[in-house]
Amino acid sequence: MVESRGAPPPDRDLELFQSLMTKHQDQLYRTAYRMTGNPDDAEDLVQEVLVEAFRSFHRFQRGTYFDRWVYRIMSHTFIDRLRRKPKVALESLDEEHGGRDGDPYRREPADPGAGPEELALRRELGDKVQEALLRIPEEYRLVVALSDIEGLSYEEISRAVGCPIGTVRSRLHRGRSLMAQKLMPYVNERDHRKK
Image 1 (spheres, helix red, strand yellow):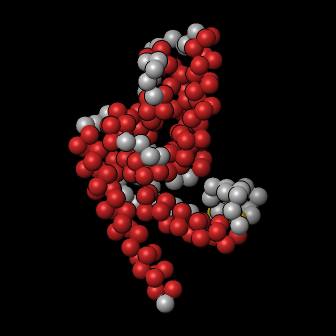
Image 2: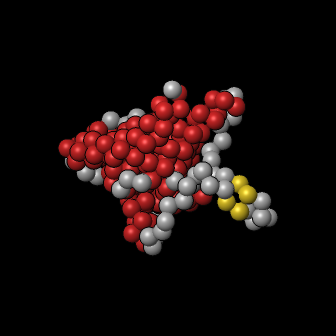
Image 3: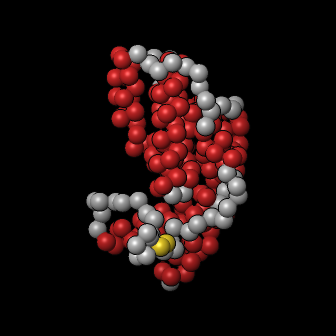
């Protein structure tokens, strides 16, 4: 994590910070989950981002988009974590994992509103998309998640990741192409099952 020498915000800024974080925490978690691939790492990333954003809040310019500012912090924090972390094998969301008590479980986000059939279809597609997302390089993964999942514009992504709009467009195009390649076997398999 990048250390900041900034002082904690005054009380009135603390209230604003808490209000903004509460408003955006679900969105930040979703993006962190898409970037990291599992709930525990996503929670850790959001926690690191929260601490860094709190320390740096005196630099946030009122009247600008708080979520874009926090995405920039998340982007840098995520990249720093990747640089520090040794390379490891990807873990499938389809595989069962052993819990502390020995009972198997699957890592998956909860979806409390859908029926069983819809849940199964969403889970299957969501797992395949997440698997494909984790198999593309990080610089493409981040812009795809921010654009296609969170709905940010090119300009917003450019500010969040700190690179020119042309680079964002290039990374997004390349990321989408890589995602399509990774998802093609799944699409072909589903088409074959329908026949």
